[in-house]
Length: 191
Image (tube, rainbow, N blue to C red; front, side):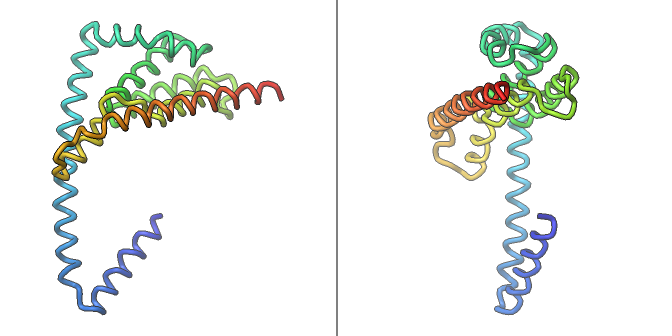
């Protein structure tokens, strides 16, 4: 990709020079830069807000209550992990549920490191690691803050209109993924 993008950019500029559209290229460069900065500021504000809410929730009993609520599900999906891994997996799931993809990433990396420490075969993913990757990728979301922020930055009339579709798609992705992962794990154990 690092070689492909420069080729696209250079060929586009050369084509614009040949057909006399250099003015449009210049305008596009500056308007794209402006849009990128605006989108970045929108994301930054959204991430600061939700990261702050998570920090406040950590200092209260809210996270513990949410963790207790999802604990039966986490224990069922991750039967062979330690307490530290349970907590880190739960925090990652909570961050994803709240739509904090960027805040969930460090939590996911921390959980994966803990799962790797518990893994007996360091060269192969454990069943828990595979399930965690799957859940993290499905990213079950109740509040899709990133999508809402993008829609707001593009001046959407109703930036939260797609929430129901996000719920359906992330729930279905998680269910199908979990079932598929369980089937693959069972098949592998019977070999």
